Image (tube, rainbow, N blue to C red):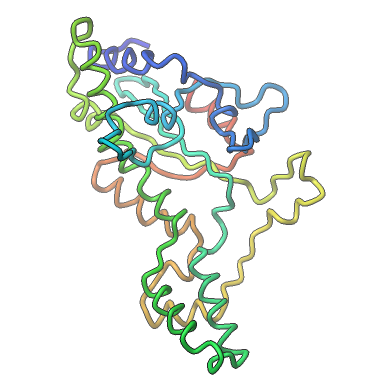
Length: 271
């Protein structure tokens, strides 16, 4: 790659975190050390930077007794293609994004209790559940919606600020916000494929299947409250956020890759 001066400065910034330069399948591990990525035949061993780990290592996100760590994507990588500098932001999520939001599950629970004539016994509880439902916002959906936004506008600029303050006697300053604005930022969420059957769970493979059936109670409430989330999958709901980020120029491209296809994404785009 033939890099401009600013591009070289950005690459040197990332390379200042060698301890977080890891294989993709390692970055994609959950808290139990199990990766969502297939690892047979050397798949998904391409190295990237574990951005989430970098973020958690920075003192700039500590304010007294508070941690003000933004929501960041799991990994970051770069590539120069022609005259364009691409920054890849990758989020690994061990869930099926074809599923309906957990908000719909809550609607089902409330509706089932009402249909079983528990209104008299649980009148106050049902009243409270309705109040919760009216304000409920799905945590996973919110996290996946805000990660690219906070990564680009908060996390990377502040991580760079700390890096520069520590090394300003030896490095040239980069206007990181302007650099990010002029780069082509590609965001991908890597989730579990509906057909994924890892060896350790092959007997439970059916648990990975999605249902396309939207409960009637969710459809009804969605119409009454004009709440699209109630009758949409996670992926469908997230697409509305990501299209806005593209239109606003925050990211160049946003989308989804299933875990069994990620190695092909590496071969076609990251290498």
